[in-house]
Image (cartoon, rainbow, N blue to C red; front, top):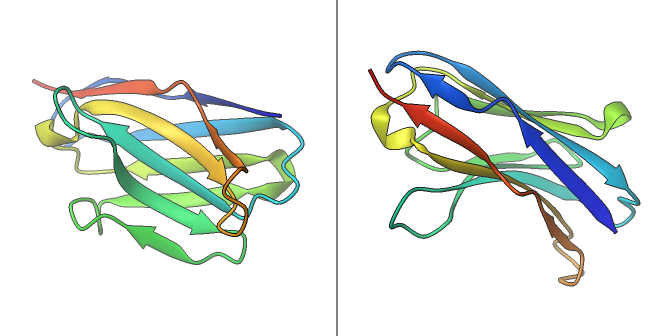
Length: 118
């Protein structure tokens, strides 16, 4: 089993920045993709950004150029640097570790709330 714990959420003004962190504990053997997802009130969960073990990244169109995903494999951590935040970025952000080859390898954190408001 893998446990994921997110941190770094909070209240920020529009135009501000936050850095989310996710630390993984347990056996991460077989996991080759790490990602951040978000779910706003009344909306479905959506992909924000993901990164493969090889370093390939994908971003949602709504965050490209403002958010950056990165990893520290030695520490089993993944980060999401969020700049130029907008009110529409308000959501619970979830960390996900999974395998794109073995669908039973799929772990989620409990989420951290990001609120962008003046």
